[in-house]
Image 1 (cartoon, rainbow, N blue to C red):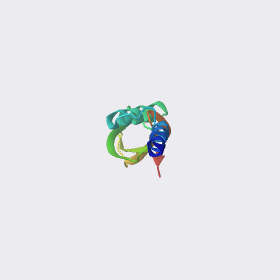
Image 2: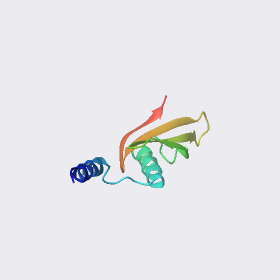
Image 3: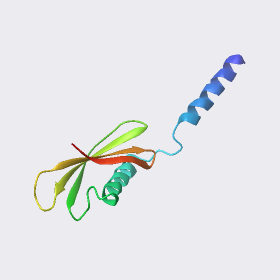
Image 4: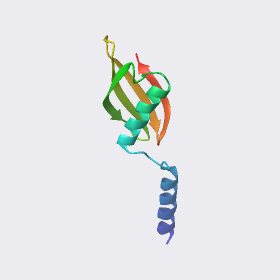
Length: 93
């Protein structure tokens, strides 16, 4: 009985630590793309965005390759996303 109570308590703690809502990868890519535009980092009228990678567990890092529409060197932009909230977005140096 004691082991059952310990297991139930451990399961409750584990579930309470899990994120309340974890967006799917495609949602996180879309959220990042929108954040890059909204923050003026990669406006759609200036850059073509190409999804590159997504890494991480609780804190996802979504990476895009940015190609200027006017020509020039490509850049890399990253967003850090926790659940469905962007916690950081920037051009990678």
